[in-house]
Amino acid sequence: MMKKPRYLQIADVLIDKINSGELAVGSILPTEGNLQTEFDVSRVTIRKAMQVLVDKDLLFRQRGSGTYVKAPRAKHNALQLSGFVEEVSAQGKTPSSKIITFELLECEQDVADKLGIEVGEEVYSIRRLRMIDDEPEVLEHTYLPVALFPDLSIEAMRNSKYDYIENTKGLKIHLARQSVKPQILDKDTASELNVDIYQPVIRVDSVGELVNGDIFEYTIHYFKVEQYSFDYVAYR
Image (cartoon, rainbow, N blue to C red; front, top):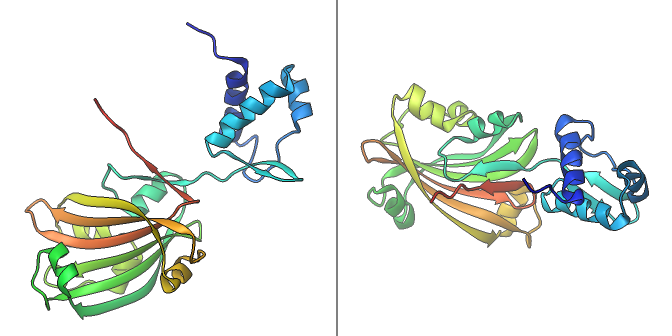
């Protein structure tokens, strides 16, 4: 087996230290000179090793100060249908939700088309700010047909929407059809997500179906680019 280049070996050591907590989030790394001495290599080798970690989004450099361990991004697996609470909890983080609006509306054409219902039918229009470790990360605007969920409450939406649908209502979720694109937010939406109006976000439109073919939701998600990553697995 071919031996890894020295800079990759050093990168692996540093990654292990980050994963173990020996190099904690927010801590400053030793200087290049100290790392040269520790690993007995050239400055070029150290810089190449550090760049590997920067490319993996594990470090950030602050001019005039040093190189620091970066907090890991939250991850979203777009190919696995799981709720925000499940997904974030599985990463060892604490999810929470803030209800911005909870309204009952007569749906317009675009929402009716997504939900497969008639214009004017009643829907819930719910805007939620999803937080990870008390930091706002995702803004959701969800539309749900009142006919499917006549007893939906604000309390249910403060927790897991999927838990309410499957465990409280006894319905089985089958799939979600999603589209992903970058977007620049309007002033009000940027303010809700606490980002600059000119800062791009990742918009994910999701239409969810039950096993019987009924459409149960249309949700627009806005993910912060700098704090959220998307994971994909491609099979051949």
